[in-house]
Length: 293
Image 1 (spheres, helix red, strand yellow):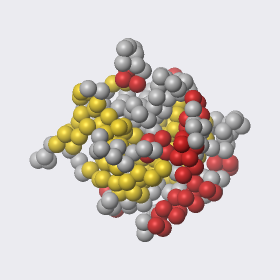
Image 2 (image 1 turned 60 degrees about the vertical axis):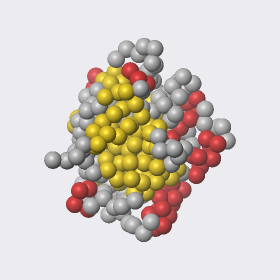
Image 3 (image 1 turned 135 degrees about the horizontal axis):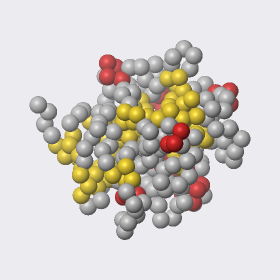
Image 4 (image 1 turned 60 degrees about the horizontal axis):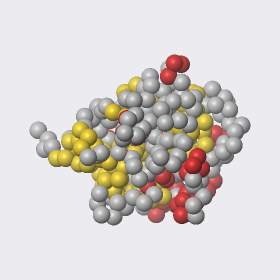
């Protein structure tokens, strides 16, 4: 029998200021399917005082390096990661998610892509532009995840590989998001999402890249009526997966934001296939002496 201890997972508050943004980020909702992809994990974020300030999703690209969103890692001092797929039952106490620790937990250090951090500090990320400057982050785990648990890791894309994809290309979006939304009341839209945390996925289609910001984002359909689930609270940093002709899973981007507070409609995902982002990731992998598979 595994010993149960309690960890506090804060609902995203400091990361997502819903009162001032017309866009929200993050979780798979609407016609989503339970997902068992081994290299996707749920990430709890802590500040310098050791207090939980939010949670998000992330994807392993080596045995101890994860890719996630920059707005998740920014201002976080440390993280804890779990690869349990759920459903993970929880209680909400004083605005925080309380759940039992039933699986192995990995601790780690978050790193934010410098361009994103600088844009936040410069005050240029406001309103819908909050996520507009290379919203990417990395997590370096203190110890590697055993290969037997997560092999194969997700592969990184080649430079500008998204440019070669056709409109309506099928892509898989994976993340840990709360699943049900009740009518928002005094506590706001953010706290209207309820249910269990679990790893889910949705099959979406790539929308034409001819839009402002297409050099930074994937724009995906998210229409529940057409069996295309969207992202909701908890899915920030979760991967967008393209399975190539050789059957290899390739991460094209990470979940960044959606167009409305109900997490429906078009979803946006930060592209990682740029020369600068791939170079930054490669440097980090070399620094920490690990290679991707």
